[in-house]
Image 1 (tube, rainbow, N blue to C red):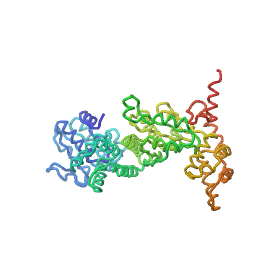
Image 2: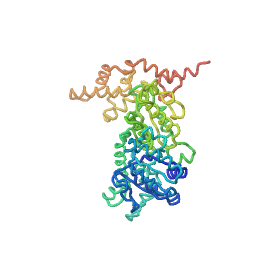
Image 3: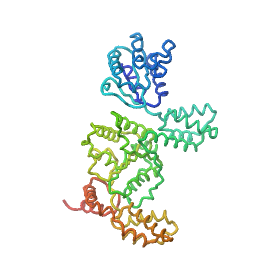
Image 4: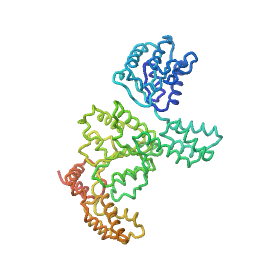
Length: 507
């Protein structure tokens, strides 16, 4: 149901007080005015703390710097006069006992009158004693149709025309921004070269980065890593390549749903984060990184509000990849935390969205400690697939060495004995192989020469891999994956061979 439909329904049902959290005052007030016309041309009164009531000449300035008087104004109008009262920034006064009591008194009165109070706020901040009398209604960011209409209006005002494809590209790139920010960035483009061009998409992307930085919840992450930068993990790469076109219109016409997401479970340093970046780059989608710790705020209701804001922003930027790194640390011991249930509510909102979302937001979650994750997170329907990323095989280590050395010494790659390097580094993860190469470069640089295979082997001999220091944790993960709880990311790992042998054994 759209915002307009839901708002009209609340008006007809005589919901007395409607709370709309939004930063787009101008657009939501225009939507309310439109709804007022559909409801028999209701009168709309707008109040703010600085100017009081505005609009009607007889009432201009009434209630200035007096929120209680602003509420008393509602009782001044005839009982049968239909009206909507918009009160801006009113969340700041809800903790006042006189305001709280007056709102509850008005709730009883307005049930029998064609009047509604609309509280506009940039955030959700509702005291416990008002939760029963306020109805929260989300106001979404502008959709593709709204954005296209705004861009066409600006083009018409400047006498410019754009090709259909360029217009669609601009509309798609503007998704996730408010109308005010869209106007601002397009005005900047006009100021630069007196017209809109296809290359202005970079300006829009920078505006998106600015918006996301201001939320302090999501990061707009640059994704330059390619699938070819991942050494090994052939099963996982095949799975990703097969779904490369799943976000296209052709896939929708075929009847395919949008992919939900992917969980990567495994040992630290095995390429889980690299894979998340490579997915976004390969699918040509923006990569958003969520630090779950930022969702939790100190005020009552703030964490839930931030979670809803994160979901709204991710869906507005869709299609996109939402990367949640080390999700096991964020939701470990959900039921045992002493935070009055805040973590449980955030977790519940998050996994419900994951299971029911229809928007093309592809969630990539990584986890090192599967024991700490709530079982609900691993239930079918949250993710399309769960992959276990184990330690690389000898052949995969050779591939990882090749990837790194091709980047570091593209012209001298043949000087390095990749087979020997792979053989001499058992139990090394991809991250540890990279660190070994960096240490070898320090050895060569300190002696004013290029680093060699022997330098790499020397640095490897001085490193104790995580597989030996965290042996119990790794064995638990391997047993968990071998029990059929996850799909193998590598085709020919020792673990996948072990699973294959188990399947072939007679019962």
